[in-house]
Amino acid sequence: MSIQDIVQQALSDGFLTPSMESEVGRICESASELSLEEYMALDQLMGSLLSGEVLAIPHKQFINVMEELVVTEVITQVADLQMTKQPDLDISDIAAYALNRLPPLYATSEEGATYQRDRAQKELLSLISNQVKEGINRFMDRPSIPGRNPLDNTTNKDVLEQISGLLKAFAPD
Image 1 (cartoon, rainbow, N blue to C red):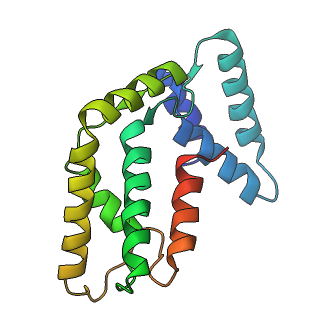
Image 2 (cartoon, rainbow, N blue to C red):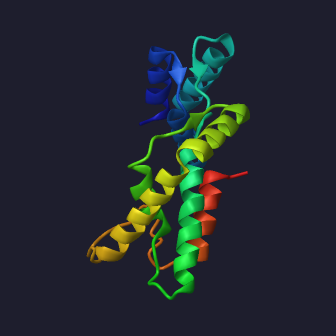
C-alpha cells in the first residue's frame, strides 16, 4: 500500500491502526525522498489526527497472563529434563501446545493481571502443569518434520537462547 492509500483508508475508517502506522513508517524510512503527493497525504493525515477526525488506535494494551504462566512452567519442566540428558526440547512448541489447550487469562491493568495470576494459582496450576507435561511428551514422541519453517527459526538455538527470546517477547521492558 502507498502512503496515499493508507491515508485514504484511515480517513474512510476514521481510525489509524498500528499496522497502518508501521507501514507508513516503513515507507518513509525506506524512501530516499518522498514525493509531493506523499507529503500532502501525510499532512492531511496529521491534520485529521489533530482534529480528531481520525483516531490512532493504540498498540496492544492487554496481556494474556496464561502465556507467562505456561512459559514459566515449561522452563521449569524442561530444565528438570535437561538435567537428565533428555534431547533438546523446543520451548516454543511445548508452550504453544499447552496454550492451545488452556483458557486465556487476559488483563488490561496490573491489578487485573495480579487477579488473573492469583486465580490461576488457585484454580489452574495442576491443569497448566499437566498440559505442559503432555506437550513435552508429544514433542518427544513426534518425528522431526522435514521442511518445517519455525516462526523465529530457533531450531538450532540452545535452551537458554530460547528462554531469553521468549522472556523478551513476553516482557519487552
